[in-house]
Length: 460
Image (cartoon, rainbow, N blue to C red):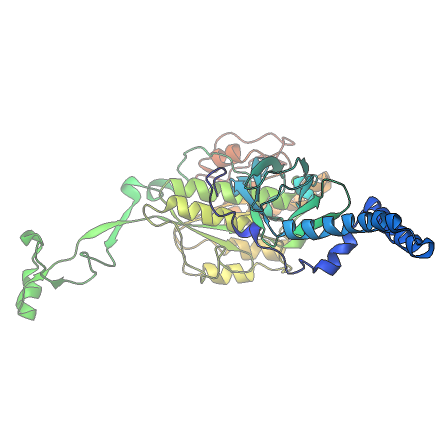
């Protein structure tokens, strides 16, 4: 809802089920209101004992004033509408989003002092609170605040709470709204260099295969002639066989296919928070997927469980149809925003899902023991190109003693035809991506992200 447009205040304007009755609203009396009520009752009692009519009038005034404030405020509470606007609804980790709150008064009476509070998760910052002056009948007030998170995820904002007070300070009532919004913090991504990982057959240009179209005027089999079809497309052999004019199929480019594999095993990663190996792998997988989508690949995301990441689609379903790269990128990012560790310990489900898959395979592995390294080596399809980035937990712990074992796992992958590179703390994904395109110079031992020499195992 755009502020200032006079539109319906939106879903936040609905009262919560716990709105409460007028009797329950008496619990909102402040110390001043309770004191006035008690003084009024005491004065009325004394007037009865002493027979003083004037004292009775004073007592009634003192007692009725807080009760009248409760009644008016209770009615006003349900004549105040609130709304929230979040822009943008999806931000990368470390970026800010702006939340704008709007309060509309649809009452015929002015409100008293208002305190506005929105509930936000602790990771997004402190809970915002605002104090608003009285709102005239039919008026509105707008306030805004910013939220920011270094951790990806989906975070609810709301519900909105509004505390109202009367002009005399006799009563305070809280209005709760039922609606909330969701802020999606997607993984941080980096632009990658436009290198050729799979040789001439990868990406676009000469490497694109041609295949029959699947629908419309380019069916996979010759079809009947339709008004407006080019007569040069008439398939005379099929025309003679069917006894009617048939149009031959046309071929169109088939997009190169790529699978991005993300190892989410809890036991394969080290650390927590933005600096952990798992978060590095998620961010790297997002960067690779976006880069490949931009280069014209049809991208599939898989986890070690063998499930396709986006959504409930079956493994093998690729995303990124022509003219839909932006939608595919958004879907992949939102899914990766919520991906969590798996409790599995084996890569065999992913191996089963990759059987029969061709094209380019880009994998981000956690720690690999001897058995898992052998399973990972078998994931490379016959004639396919496989690039693996291995995040050894020992390297992320800063333990140099495990360097020999990690190098042996890399050698197993390279022997199976993989381009295998180690990725340690502080590793630069664009630099690793550039090394994956060709042998290049060996990285010096001990360099950040390169615990050993010979990081690139040949041209991908």
